[in-house]
Image 1 (cartoon, rainbow, N blue to C red):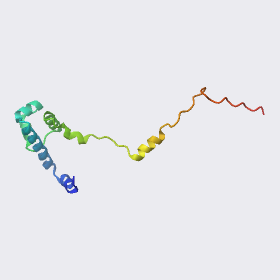
Image 2 (cartoon, rainbow, N blue to C red; image 1 turned 90 degrees about the vertical axis):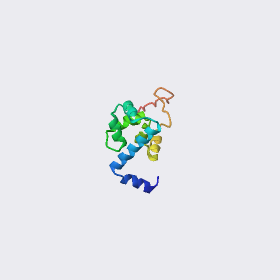
Image 3 (spheres, rainbow, N blue to C red; image 1 turned 90 degrees about the horizontal axis):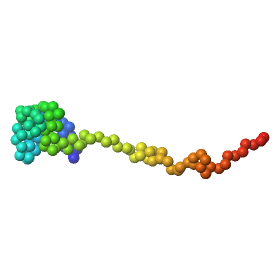
Length: 119
């Protein structure tokens, strides 16, 4: 993605983003040859709610998830999956802390205890 493209996405208004989502829903619904009523019924929502979503009107997040689930498009949320990454320095420190040798346990191959001096 170019820097200009990234800046353009940041400057979009909330309503423009909602319209973009609505268009995404509509295009994928049409590609799958599903009517609004069929999709709404399968998603468990009202047809007018779906129509509003496709027109770029505000809706609840749960409604969006239900519709995307029926369209098999939940993958768009994959970018929200956060997995913390370990820095190379932290990784090196963790490796340094790993045991390099085993210690003898008491009574196992230990040298006999030294006698105390009688002095």
